[in-house]
Image 1 (cartoon, rainbow, N blue to C red):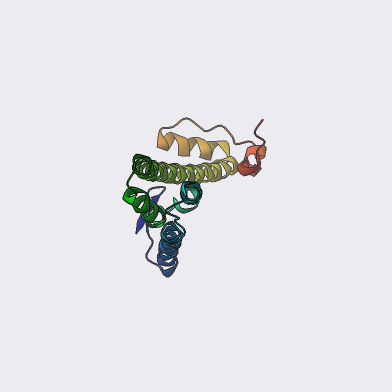
Image 2 (image 1 turned 135 degrees about the vertical axis):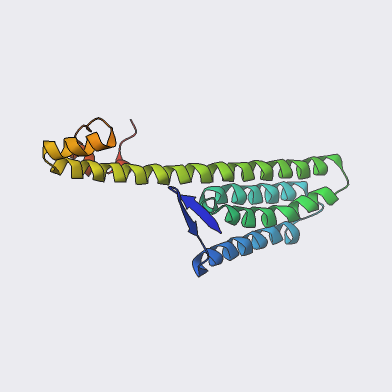
Length: 178
């Protein structure tokens, strides 16, 4: 498995990544077995409760497993397939419609997982760039003005504005929202 963060490709081949994927798959299989074992063919309310419980588990897994894209897939597909087949095997229109809606739901969750992974990756990249830029600003602030001017002239960039101490010390994760 290869994940790219901040332009650096990381190969996740260690035991922890494999264990994470295997755990996600096993968890999906256990939840999927509920779609077989707890399905009550004569009770529509029980079927809907089971369907919503499994859908909620899949939706709840989205932010937790999307860091590693195959992990969400390894969980969601085995969790959803049994209940989808149970619904499709019923011989009426409402069950077939519900089976189709599960397929639409899983498709939407897979697209959301890819989007969540992209946003997470970009957030990490931006945080690394911010950290690097603050470190560069601190180094430049420690140089005398002639050294700073020679470095920025060599780069062809205008001299940077000094980074205020308050920003250098800020913990951006604890900012109030409004």
